[in-house]
Length: 155
Image (cartoon, rainbow, N blue to C red):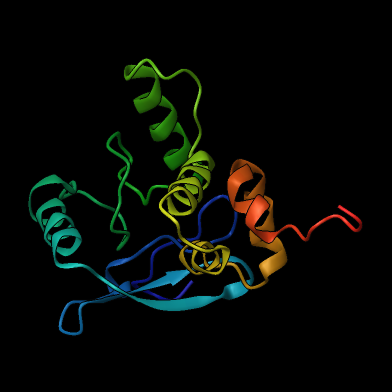
C-alpha cells in the first residue's frame, strides 16, 4: 500500500479515499473489478453531502484516508462487508426484511428500465464492460423484453 492511500478492503478493492475526489473538476475516481478506474462527475448535491460528512460526521480519529469510516473504533475505512451490514441494518429498521447492498444495483437497474431507459444506459450506470452482463437485468422487466422479441414465424 502506498503511504497515505486508503487500505484495501476484505475483497482487495481499495476503499473510496480522499484522493479519489477532485473538488476543482467536480469528479470522483471509482475503482472496480480488475483494477478498473473510471472518472465520473460528482453532482453538486452529492459533493455537498460528502463535504458535510467530512466536516461533521467523519471521526477525527480516522486511521486512514478513506472517505467512509467505521463508526465504531477502530476508525478504519468502511469495507464492502461493512456497507452490506449498513444496508441490511437500514432495511431492517425500515421493516423491509433482509436486503443486502447488491440489491441496490438491481433496484437502480429496475428503476432505469421502468422509466424507459435502455439496457445500454443501465450498463453505463452499473459500469458493465459487456452488454451480456447487463442482460441479466432484463428478467425484471418483461415489457422491455416484449419490445426486443422478434415475431414468431408464421404468426
